[in-house]
Image 1 (spheres, rainbow, N blue to C red):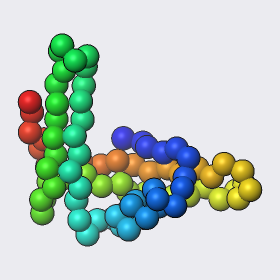
Image 2 (cartoon, rainbow, N blue to C red; image 1 turned 180 degrees about the vertical axis):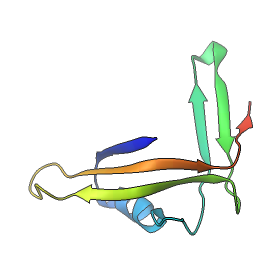
Image 3 (cartoon, rainbow, N blue to C red; image 1 turned 120 degrees about the vertical axis):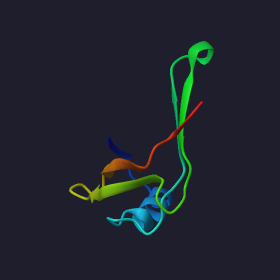
Image 4 (cartoon, helix red, strand yellow; image 1 turned 180 degrees about the horizontal axis):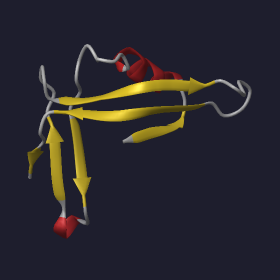
Amino acid sequence: MPVGGLWDKVLDDCLGADADSPPTSLRTLVVQIGPVANRVIRTWTSSTNVGAFVSDYSVDTDDPLGNIGWSGTLQCSGAPVRS
């Protein structure tokens, strides 16, 4: 899934280290779908072969004095737990 937004140092400290492809570690990802009364939750719990990572992480520095953006691709590995 494509992801991105406004860049800042805190984000870069988190994503920059984990944006290797393939990643050195997978992260836990929880996705909530639907309204509260009818919500479905999918969880990829971090392990050696299940989890999430950001690939293709890049920072757009075309306008260093303006808003700096970032983009990447959120990828999941393994099957989620459904609840």
